[in-house]
Amino acid sequence: LATHIEHVVDGLPLFTVLCVFCGLILIVCTFVSHTVGSLIILPIVSEVGARLPEPHSRLLVMGAALMASGAMGLPVSGFPNMNAIMLEDTLGNPYLTTMDFFKAGIPSSVIAYFIIISIGYLIMLMLG
Image 1 (cartoon, helix red, strand yellow):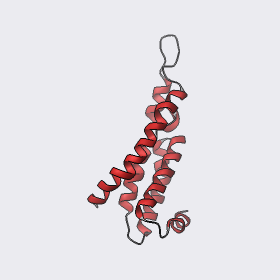
Image 2 (tube, rainbow, N blue to C red):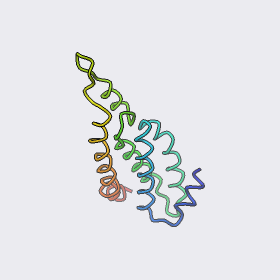
Image 3 (cartoon, helix red, strand yellow):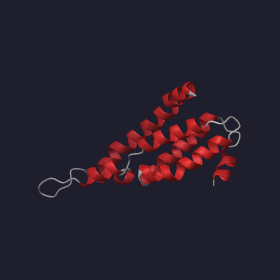
Image 4 (tube, rainbow, N blue to C red):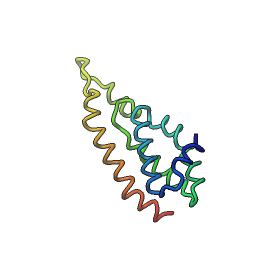
């Protein structure tokens, strides 16, 4: 899989590769937990980053890890979300609904994406 992705991103600038991986991990980690999404995708990101003409695996892994934490659009996106959706008042009514996660989580995830690929990218480049 990493070899196929390497051929797809071959010749693309580092910023574009970061945008692609952050978008991919945002989508995956929205539908599965952050931990599972990271376990699946981060080894691939690291391998592809190491095979780039100018290796930047640490930058890509850090960006992808930050994005995994920023994916929060559904109750299944992470364990804190799952705990929050399970809370009920004394009458058994849930405090939160899935729509609450959509309304707050999707915009927050998109904002996190743009922060990571802009400010985060510059900071990661400066740190090496």
